Length: 371
Image (cartoon, rainbow, N blue to C red):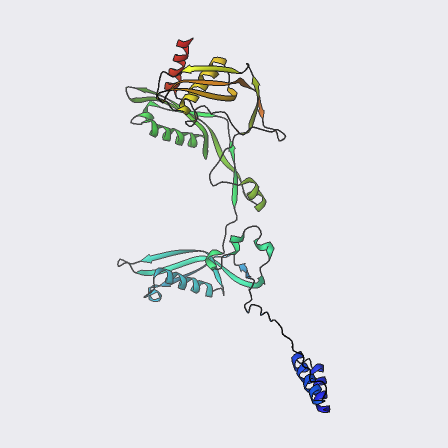
């Protein structure tokens, strides 16, 4: 009996699992001849996943700023393809400086008349792993993809170089008679651009326009006008500047945002036009009616315009336009505190919005006849 009690206390002192203690105490109670009542218990066990996710590490590199080079000759290249040969010669170059990876390698491959490699030379920058560290949130917050590369060939990046474009005043160049000989419009424009770029020592041209004269199918005069621009102020950009300014691979010019007030010039009007049973669809007829109404009132737009159509045997015979004629006034640079309407007026010369002269003339003629 005493022995069993000792076993129980020893189990408790040694932090043996509780079930051992319970068994010992139960045996002790039974052996003592006490009550025969037995207590049972159930338990639920939750096993955690056995796998553990590992946080990636970063290998810090020290780059040797002096180029390293190595050459593998024909005897070292037997039975190797180009990729294998490149790996071998890179390893050979790194071994000379105890390097671990090569950045920006350049290869020169020489082959014999039979097409087999006779030598391969590599030149690049050797980098040595100086230490390892665990990746942190600050490493990946600005661009995760930069740190998703694990292959040595994908760890080198160029810092972004940006430049401003400095535009001069509008310039013009004209092609001589000799320069126009044998040229069509396309080739003359190309020559005029090249001439202006060379003459102004420019890199780009903006807002190009040209005029030409033709006599019996041959160009007799050609003049180009444009704003020449030069790349200036080359510099390394910062991440903040890159995200804010969004630099582009080729020059982009954005026009200044201009705002205008709208001033009604007449009361709401209602004009009805006969279409002459033309085959135009509703969209075309709307544009024609709008153009005629604007011309009649010397207006820029109609406020709250609406249209009504009269049909005869599925053909539109009349279109009625209603609206308040208005003009644009007080053109000025858009201010930060102004609220603007995002619905812009049609742009002259834009093929998507420009009126078609044939339809417009037809409708205006109909309108004049009606008057």
